[in-house]
Image 1 (spheres, helix red, strand yellow):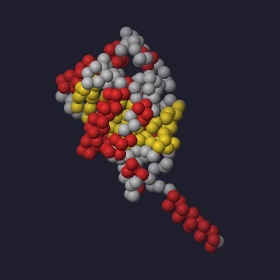
Image 2 (cartoon, one colour):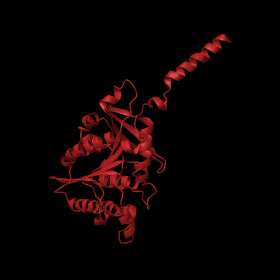
Image 3 (cartoon, helix red, strand yellow):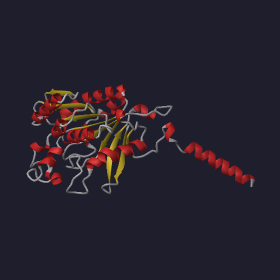
Image 4 (cartoon, helix red, strand yellow):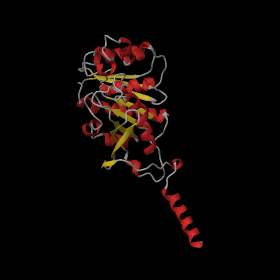
Length: 289
């Protein structure tokens, strides 16, 4: 009996020291290590019944903290025809930027042409719900993050810029700040392009649905100042006209935002530069929180 008591006590001690508690910031180790700062994780979608990859870029201090420390998160969305690995592969400086700004970068899968919508025509394309709810829930459960809109931002390029603004404008209680780089901010100007009709039906058949999913139209109906917004576009980009219109709508409605035009095209050369300004914006927002 004495030995049984000793074994039980030893087992309790082992359990106590090996099992983390949410109060001290422990998180289970997950993902495949791509390099010293990047993890590839598989994030399930209950809504779609699928599992999608994401890259998580961690600051160097994440592994050096002697006491548990929590970090803000910026979600980086890829563009049309892209995938979750684009940001990590095309912009190596993201590792340095994550450390510089002391934040976690999450690059989730948005499918070839989901437009980050919950498609009314395809139950297997519910990427609005996936990106806005399922991905952050997974990240918060597995990494040392703040489950708080004041420390959660979202941005993206092209289709991803549309997705980031669409999601954050719909749920400012989930994302305190949002950005867009060369964003497709008005779907209505592309009625026959980029597979958008696969999710919304033809523009002629449902103009109201297209309007309800276009950032310019959503912004025209808003009167609130959150989330904080940053928008930029290259002056040689064909999307500059729609981005200027969004800027005008935000001004008309007295919605605070940062808007920038710089020389550049719709390409990675522009986005590799733009992400520096976007992350500086998010860094300042998080520090105000």
